[in-house]
Image: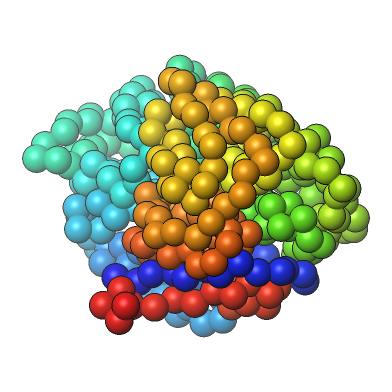
Length: 421
């Protein structure tokens, strides 16, 4: 087990942003529907990506992954079972359900695990696939889906916006007979890229980036041209929050501003100014950090994946901030750990109230999930002394070259084996 040690630091510099793992994961699942060898650039080398590649390899795929460039061939896939050993470590494995079912007419995918932030049931996925003609049973912890006559296009109305559910049904629709219309679809940039890759490779698809997506079944496996994964807006937002909490000038490069406008606007509310160019965003120091009120919601609202980082920044605001978490029921687990560093945060149901500013002091803290972990790193940057973050493997699910990138902007950070302490 690894521990990340973060010491109080002055920071300044530029951070190159990696590809978005939340865009890459559905795109890797999409490769199940490709008949050719595909080249994908800007793929982040993080734990979740390697888990998905391991799953695809067990299904029968071949790949080469060097310097963020992935070459993958799924033409020889023979297995249609995504086993518990893999799926339990990463919920995104559920994204293999629809393409396996669409291509082979039958598959077994373990019910997912891999995250502590909430239940996130897959019933919306299953209900939609059943409407498309699949016979679905839950057997011994596995989803057993059968559509021997193929999937049928139809109208799908999601009762609740679901990112992975939208992505699964988009992929199911590629080989479905007829037209599939998805209403109340997710609009995240990662969903948009999945649609754009399909459109660019011959699939007739309308409504990209809206809540109503219409897809005409393509009828055969796809010939997919090379493409690059979009930048990671959450990684970029995290490093901007590092600049905010340290009140320092930090630049993120290789970004798409339109994907991050909701994050930048909240930092502007906190009195930070920015320099923005075509692919760079620079946060500038301020004389006073204002408190902020945040309500998480689906895109284009404020992303739930950024609330923990903003909570850390709010500990340094001059006044009382509130954050309401509307998407997940267990996403305030970082509060107790930030309080261990000296924060003053109270929780009432789904609302966290942050009383600032407070002086943070280094302590031993526990990472509970991916984004909670990043909030603790941010706290450690300004906490007096040394902050030791345990169970840090969560961080490496989503942040590529984390230690190197932090070191390059001046953060005194090191990764050690817990046994060596």
